[in-house]
Image 1: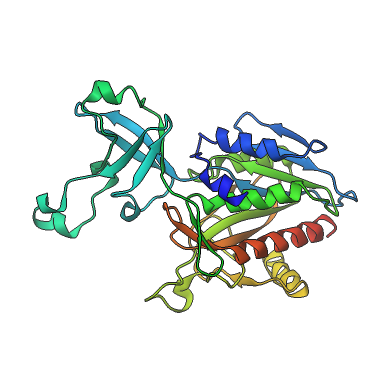
Image 2: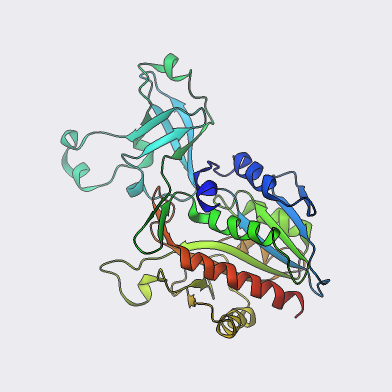
Length: 335
């Protein structure tokens, strides 16, 4: 299921194919609705009625690109959708909504002059080459406002590693689909939300609709456990389990829930670790401020090279996130 989800294309505002896949996996006995923004909100019945309403959330969208202009020579100008570092863009193969393929290019190295050789080209200076000889030919394959996606295969390698685009946050979507398709102890509101990558917009709408007491956000977060990085700068480490945050740029997390996550992990022999740098953000930023306030915790998959064509995660960490999410949902439902 993770492979199938990662290979589907769906940037912010273009989540339909991802949503269609998710809806196809919702069991017949589970009630769900699709709201005006495109969120999928599922009402999962458990063996027992929950004392508290618990919302579990993962976002369907991925980072990508949007076509902004077609040049006379057939090259396509574009803008990033979501936060993407220029260093992971130049030279990449991409797929357009039409299915046409292209390569992201810019001025060749031997044509650079002076300081240009020491700096990366900005996205504004790049273009997508689809092999069209002129604007008229390019218009057969693309319209302004069309999306473009990293062209990337799903690969398993090493001892339990996986490489793909969109692990952020298709891993979270997979876990929630697993929850929908098994028997839960208590009722849960399971939400697949849109437009996280451009400002946590879908989750704000979903949380307003659900009006939960507690929320569990399933995410992916940056791991820098690579050569030359030490101590807290690693942020988190692949193979060390689910990542629980105490603070990021959008949320100061409920301290009691943060501590409770570690207690539950210890009680159930689940690997867990702390995100050691205050950076980034996720749908918790919108959810915890919804309505009269929502007690919220974020549980993330540690992921190298996030927001690129080659995100790398470890399957055992995804499993740790799954196990912790199940246990937290039970705990919060009857807190």
